[in-house]
View 1 (tube, rainbow, N blue to C red):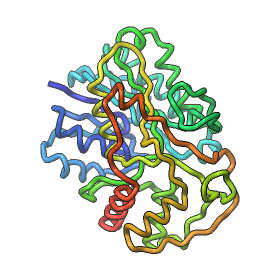
View 2 (tube, rainbow, N blue to C red):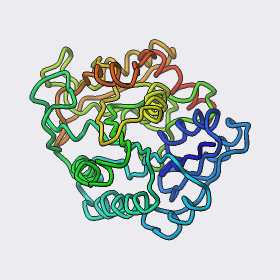
View 3 (cartoon, rainbow, N blue to C red):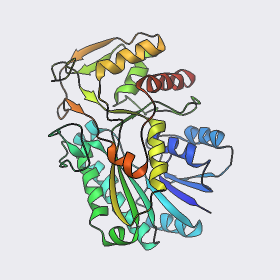
View 4 (cartoon, helix red, strand yellow):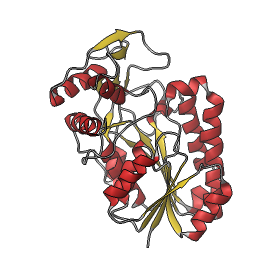
Length: 332
């Protein structure tokens, strides 16, 4: 029997993980405050699961007693920590809110896990911890120094794990540093559907393709890249899920850190043009000023995840664009 607690399991990344994990594990317990998602998404997860083994508890990581009781009563043996606010820009405007939710919430959550002797933990970190790269591609030994509060929160949470004797000596902890997940579940049933104005590029492209917005704002066209626009490592959300499954199955005492990316960099214009070509739809855009804190290029060296976890991203940029649009069309 294997029961998993998934903090933030109703959000974009978490729900895609649950859609796969529910076919493998006995029971999945989602703890989510629904800030970045809604109950309708959970109903879709139930439909995808077909096993009636997914449970949603509306709460936050700050509720120590609820989490403690949940783990005790359900013999939880593995935990994944996805829970987070996710707007890098907003983190600069509301650093206190982000620190409270991310760092303090994680501290309480980790205290509960230690009390209950959890032995298998994945924490979803981010490539934002690397800041402005010294060199590319980025490997796990690159210095960390974030340029925004969101990234600094991730660093602080990583340090809670790295410096804690329990996690160093008694638990298999995997810190997974994501690059840029996009795409959607192949069924088209779940995908990225942020509340309010999207902060990430692909959801904004989808809104323009659906004529909700007039055009995509491309922040800067004078970077030192092949076309002057920012370059990022886009990874299909279902590849990212595969990385988590492999991570859960990797058992070694202590804290291990892995990049989850493709190792390929694509520019903003590459993404827009690929989306247009694959889906036969026009996406108008305009160049505007750079955003503070943005860097020219960020892409991963994913070789450690491949050699240690046996994980390698398989899906293409075309797959990401096609699946994202399928979801958007079916859920508009």
